[in-house]
Length: 110
Image (cartoon, rainbow, N blue to C red; front, side):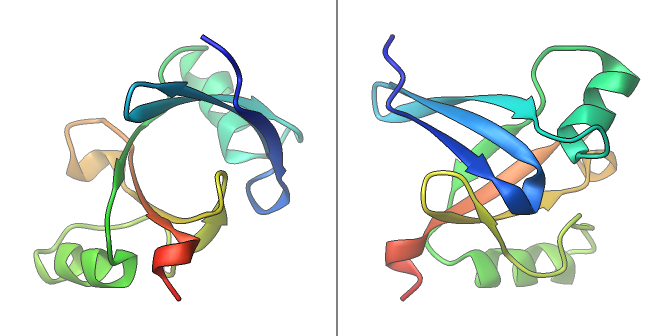
């Protein structure tokens, strides 16, 4: 596997290596600050899989549907993420302990 790019996402205090795998991609995360969400996750749970990400066409609509169904999200509004995407996370407590990221390409949000 080859790294497609390495990006720093200041809003998430994270450095991300993007690695294409077929039509999907693997993201390797590194905390750039001790108080980042990734650093806190590793401190609590150790290294390993942090989250699973699903691509959606309309992130705002997806968040709205989840909230209407009583599912709590981490992010009240979409945030800037790696790979020129808007992202939002669903609380692990809503999904059996799995952190879920929903991602929308910025080009499809315009």
